[in-house]
Image 1: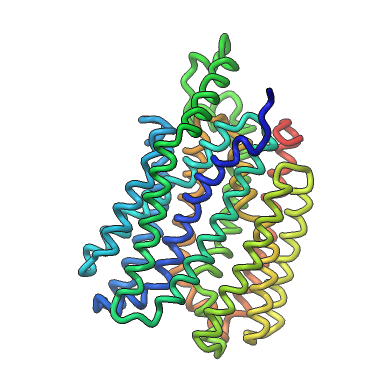
Image 2: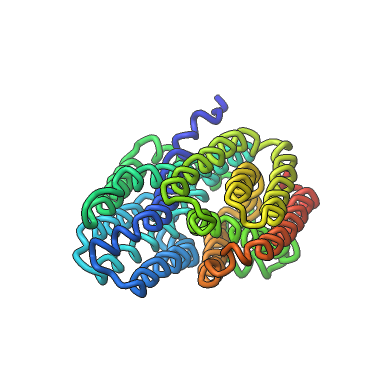
Length: 419
C-alpha cells in the first residue's frame, strides 16, 4: 500500500522543531542581550563578543556538521544533536558571568548550526516521493518563523523582570524544547521504522549499480564527471542564498534598531516586529502548500518582485517611520516565497543523498559568515541619513538573488530535476 504525505509528516515536525530552536537561539539572544548585560554587568565589548560568537558558532556547526554525520552516521547525529543544544542552553540558564555564558552560547550555536542541514537531509532521505520531499522540507520554514515569533513574545513578557531572570527563563524554555526534541527523535519507534524503510529502499535502488560500491564525497560530486551539473547547482544556490540572507539578517537583527532611530518608541518597535513576523509566518504556511508543485516558481517571481519594490519604497520614503514599517511589511510578504524555503528544497532536490547535509551546511555556513562580517557595518548603513542609499543597494541585491534563482530553476529543468 502506497503511503501518503501524512505518514511522513511527523519527520517534518521533528525537523521543524530543530529549525524553531535555530531561530529561537538567534532571536532569543538578540531580544535578551540587554537583559544579560544588565544582569551580569557585561561591558559593550563583551556583548559584541557574545553576539558575534553565536553567529560564528552556527556557521561552524553548519560547515562541519554534515562531515560529522558522514563519519558517524546521519541518523545518530539527527537523534543526539539536540542534547548538546540543551546542554549549551542549560549552561546559559545558570551562567553566573560572561565566560560561562559565552561557553553556553558557543555550544548551543554549534549544535543549532549542525542540526539544520542534517535534519532536512533526514526528511528527504526518509521520504520517497520528490513532491512530498519538497512540501515537507519547505514546511520546516513555518517552524523557523514560529521560533522567531515565540522568542519575541517570550522576551516581551519577561522584559520587566529584575536582573537576568527574564533571559534565563527564555533560555530555559529553549532548553526544555531541545530536551523534548532529543527524546522524541531518539526513542520514537515511528521514526526508527521510517529510517529503516528508507535504508532498505536505497539499498534496493543501488543494488547492482556503481553507487553501491563507489564512495561518494562532496569533492567527487562537485568536481567529478558531472561537475558541470552539480557545480552549477551549487554556485546558483550559494549566490541566491547569500543575497537573500543579507536582507533577512539585516531585518532580523536591525529592524528594531532602524525603527528606534526613526523615532519609534521601544514598545512600538517591538510590537511592530511581532505583527510583521505574523505576516511572514502566514505566507510561509501558504508557500509550503505549493512548494512541491509548479506554482512555487510563480511564487518565487512574485516574492522577488514584492521584495524589490519594498526596497524601492523605503528609498522613496526617505527614512520615514511609516515608510520603514510598510517596507518591512511588504518584505515579509515576499521573502517567504523567494527565500530560505526554496534554498532548502533546491539543495535537497539537486544533490545525491550522501552529500546533501554537507553541501547544505557549506552553503548555510558560508552565508552565515558573510552576514556576520556584514553585520559589523550594518548599523552605520541603516541610520536615517544613509538608509536611502543602502536600500538602493539592497534592491540591487534582490535583483542579483533573483537572477541566481532564475538560473537555478532553468538548471533544474535542463537536468530533469524539477518536473
